[in-house]
Length: 395
Image (cartoon, helix red, strand yellow):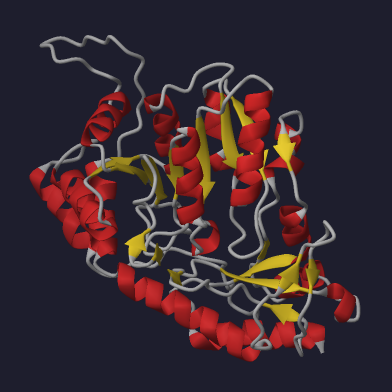
């Protein structure tokens, strides 16, 4: 009998979603507005600890609106973390602006604050100060926000915080999604909670969110007829999908706890070794030893990661030549989905002609890193199957 497919991260319903969706049907609120939309936005603001939120069709739509709200236009430059999913960068091009890709540091795998400041100085020297910066919290691990906010304030460059993967993560009890001038969440089917497809834009500046809602509903002016004085978008979340979101919010902390349990079991079974890396020579080098040659990213002090996806680094030089691709292919042969870490934007064909500033960290992470199945609905027996297959490859 063929083994049941183990997915990387699949939707996990909690049972409350159907109540809110049924209420929408019963009251005929089947539209891109309604009580569920309002309730979901309220739930998000209370959970994240921020003043205002707008529920949208996707996280990508949220980044696009954030750029519009910050006045980004053709020929402007926007700094963007290179080590991320393309949805972080694509909206820059929607605005015909220029993405400036910046590499990562090794403590969180997010944008490197030291390199970030060097890049800002360099762009200013070239005659054009970046108009915004997009900072991402990868795989649920918060970026070095204290340093990044200091740089943002020093050069007066606003932060768009891409917290698509980091709902529930925090630094010193301050939740991700509350650090940016504008912040973004995603509720795609593989995220820690889902609305099937959806996202949100958040800010402590309520007027920005009011403008975002206006633009997201085709920028319809106050008038008895359809009148438009600005270009609008069909970006609002429906009341049906928001009902799913309201139900998901009731189990969010349970989902986070389960994903952290999954991460802990992988850590315990695959070597119990945190990643320690030096980059003094310009090429990252692991400086500690693991019995399995598998390494995990540790939370910095006062950081809390939702561990959306468990990620590992495989040191093939010390592992008899076994690479992350060897492990990925063996998992796939056993009907288990895994995935390389994000391919950096500066290595993507579509972005090859845009400026990038590299310290080789994201190249190295992409070469050696793998995301393991991490869904909160994964059975313990399934996770043990994943672990045993990995052990069989690296033995």
